[in-house]
Image (cartoon, rainbow, N blue to C red; front, top):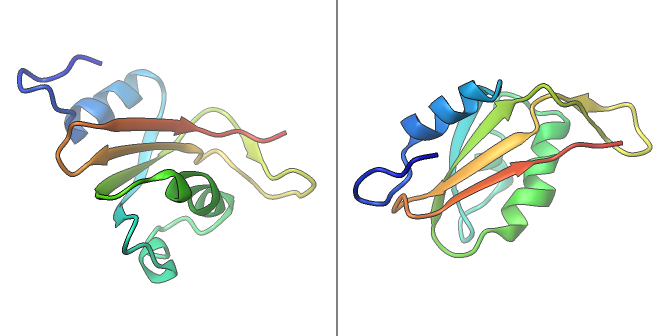
Length: 110
């Protein structure tokens, strides 16, 4: 991904990059380490295994600051170990409020 002239990441660039890699944007939320609550997370339209992945794998690893979280449907299937729950919505990208940090998480199961 090419950075803008003022070295920041933008949602537009992120979404274009994702589309080129067959990721489809399905949802976005804004979170911060200090204000993460179940109510805010419940704003996601998809409340299945991808929501649990977000709560267990992504949110605990954010530090201070605010992030926009982009939830993508990928072509890879995530299956909860020892369970039948699954999701293709397992690609997550976070951009901090300043646009200076981009994190991409692609999680898959067994």
